[in-house]
Image 1 (cartoon, rainbow, N blue to C red):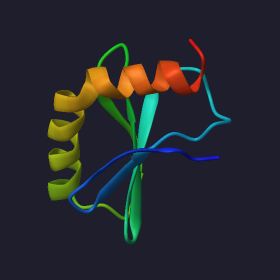
Image 2: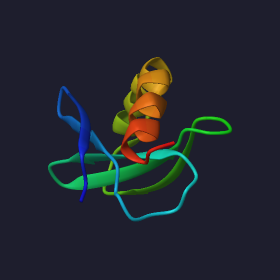
Image 3: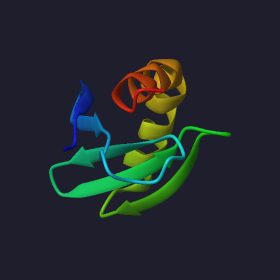
Length: 79
C-alpha cells in the first residue's frame, strides 16, 4: 500500500507501507521518482529520471511541509 500524503502541482507525495523505519517521503511525477529522508535532516536519498530543477523544487516543498509529513508518517505507521 502506498498512501498519498499530498498532491502538489505535478508531484505526488506518498509512503510505502513496508519499508525501513527511518522517516522519509517518496515523490512521483509522470516519469520519475525520488525519495527524501525527513530526519535527522531533510536530504535526498535516491532519485530516478528527475531533473535538478524538480529536485530543488521538491527540497523546498519538503522543507515547508516537513512537519505535516512527519505527522502523517506517525499516523500511518501508528507511532
